[in-house]
Structure formats: structure tokens, C-alpha cells
Length: 474
Image (cartoon, rainbow, N blue to C red):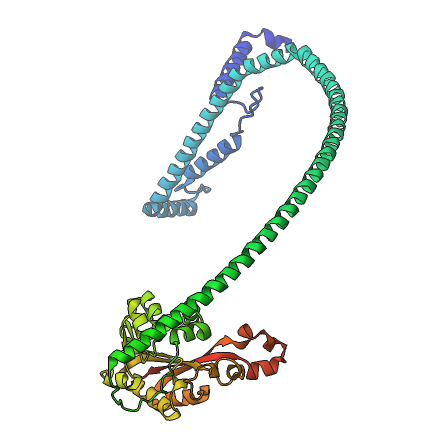
């Protein structure tokens, strides 16, 4: 080796090999660059490319054979066949060459990528060295920071312990102060409540006594005023009736009415005392407001003081009434209601057939003779238009309490009408959608009824009044 080292030709050959190797490495970088970046190895792809190029070059060639006439003839036939098939494999050859060129282009791109990565690795090396120098330079600082952090953790644990102890002591002292304050506040509140309760008892006691005394005096004065007022009104009404009778002249005999002859008593006072105030009657008739709402021509048979007419006026329903009492008709007119004094049957007979869409008759049929009740229902059916509503309300004879209290208070009552009988009259007259509703439970006005057994109370002491409603179908 020593002799070879002194040979100038050998030295020149080695320099040439080194230069070729450097140029090859420059063009095809070694995957082991010495840096942290490892390049992909392209040698397997190069070997595969060379093998493919060899195969492409051998397409169309004829295998060599030994010399001789037969072998030469065979070689000639093979060449002629290969030349004849050249048109068939031409496209395949071109495709293979194009694929080899594509592989070569990919290899060139990958090699260029490797060179770029190597350049980046060579440029990154100074940065890495600088980072290593900085780490070595700041190593003492890191140790100092770690030592400071350890001392800080120990100091923080002690500081948190002291804070916890101080917080417990503070909360304990605060709890003691709060307990003492709450105790004092409770004592003061208790004393204040006792004082206020004592004053309130004294005040309410004095107020009750004063109110009771004032109420007693007020009721006594009201009783005296009511007695005097009733006496004056009764005398005035009696004088008015007597003067009207004198001015009327001799009586004219009228046809026999279908209702009972009126008794000469103060009917306004009678209604107020036994039927109740007008507001009470209106509340009881609220049931009919929804049934008659939206109708245009409603007739109230036996309108009395006009409670139903006022109810209809509040609902915006055009309604008028008829009654035999001149006094009650005058009262209705003073209220601005449309009312007329006439016999119920005569007035209803004069109404055009089918002109009404609602008829209301409350506390009337019990005044009629038995045969007149059916006649009234039939006449109402005749005067109602199809879809018209008839509502008849009367005392309920199923409730025995009605005979002990209300029914016989009215001297013009003839006989009660049982609910099944009135329903039958509705059916006979051609009404449909018949409904029966019961009102005014006896227990409300006669609490003693509640002492009876429930079965007996329901069977014989139910509702004081009932109503039957029917619609004309055609």
C-alpha cells in the first residue's frame, strides 16, 4: 500500500474516484446526512428502474442460437414474426417507455427533495448548537429557580396553615358574637311581641265592644224606621187603590180569565218578603242568560218585577213582558223595560205564529187550572219559530219542603205541576231537546234538612224549584 501511495497514476485515479463519488453524492444525497433529519433511501427505486429499462430494451429482440442452416432458418423466421408483430406491441412499448420516464421524473423529484432536506438540516445545525449552548449557560439559573420553587412550596404550606388557624379563630369569635347578638335580639323581639299583642287585644276588645254597641243601636233604629216606612207606604198604596177604584166608574164584566182571580194585597211587598229581593232573583236566573243569548224576540209571560227582562237587557237581547198586575207592569216601565198589562192567553193568542224565538215563563203555571197548563205549552209551541226555546220554571212538588214553606204562602196558587207531567206536556206539544234542571236546594234555606238520612234527603227534600226547557224542532 505504501508503494501504491507513491504512484502518481494511482493517486490520480483515487482523486478521480473521490470526485466522481462527491458528484454522485451531490446528485444523490446519502440518507445518513449526519443531522437529525433522515432522508429516504432511493436505491431500491433505482434498481427497479434499471430492471424496467432492461426489460423495455429487450422487447422485440430474438434469442441468439447456435450456427447452422436450421438454426439460421429458425432465427430468420423469428425475426420475420417479431417484425410482423411490431405493429401490435408498438403501443405497449411506448407505454412502458412512458412509465419508465415517469418513474425517472419521480426519482428526480425525490432526489431534489432530499437535497432540500439536507440543506435545511445543514442550516439547522447552528441553531441546535446555539440551543445547546443556551441550555448549558442557563443550567445554574434553572437550579436556582428550582431551589427557590422548593422554598416557596414549603413557605406556602406554612402560610396556608397559619391562615387556616387564624380563620378558625376568627369564625369562632364571630360565632360567639352572633350568638350573643341573636340572643339579645330574640329577647327584644319577644318583649316587643308581647307588648304589641297586649295592645292589640286591648284595642280589638274595645273595638268589638264599640262596634257591637253601634250595631245594636243601628239595628234598633233601622227596625223602627222600617216599621214606620212600611206603615206609611201601605197606607199610601191603599189610598191610591181606593182613589183609582172611585175614578174607574162602574165595573165592566170581563170574560172569565184562565188564571186565578188576583187577591187584593200589596203584591210588591209580597214579592219582596216571600220571593226575595230582586238581586236575589236575578242571581237565580243567571242560568238562563246563556240559553237565551243571541236571540232577537223573547217574550216573558208573567214578567213580575222584570228581573228576567233586566237580565236580557244586560245580554243585549230584545225582550218584552206581559203581566196581569198593573202595579208590576208600571214598575217595569219605570225601569225602562217593555211590559204590557194583559191576560197571558189573550196576549199570546194575538202574537203571530212563528214570530218568537224565545218564551220564558217563571212561577206562573202553578197559578193555572190543570187543563190550562197543557194549553199554554201548546200555544207557546205554535208561536215559536223553528229552533225557538221555551223555558218554564215552577215549584218542585218532589220536594216535600215546598209544601211546608213556599207553595201555600201564595194565595193564588192552585196546584203544583210535577216534573214528569210538565215534560210529558212538552213532548205532546212537539218540543224536542227537552231538559229538566233543578234549583234552590232545600238544605240552603232549611238547614234542618241536613239532619235527615241522605237517601231520604235526596228523594224527598231536594230542590225547591225546577225548570223544563224545550226547543221547537219544526
